[in-house]
Length: 149
Image (cartoon, rainbow, N blue to C red; front, side, top):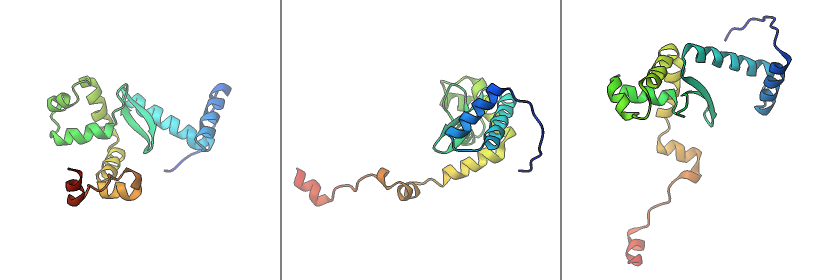
């Protein structure tokens, strides 16, 4: 992404907070500040969306739900964009929350589509290869099952 240099006056307390975040995440001040600014812009453009940190990095989620935007988009595609059916699937969410996720997708489709592609590649074979500790144990052989009886 292209960048420009601008002078900006930031309150000392804010600088200290950003420095603490950057240190905790082992990142530099500039990168942390830019990420915070970008997230703030996106949350202003899409009220009801917040950013959550996790193993997959920071991601857009529906505020107060823990549900990622990409999950709602995937389910919306499965119900062919039918908001009523989507609402029945996520019956505990308000329509405004679902619309916030869909609005976020409308504004940031490249990000959400990339996440959907990554998720689609996570088939069991790939997950087990990356994380053998989660692979289910081999089922007992027919001989072993008979011996248990």
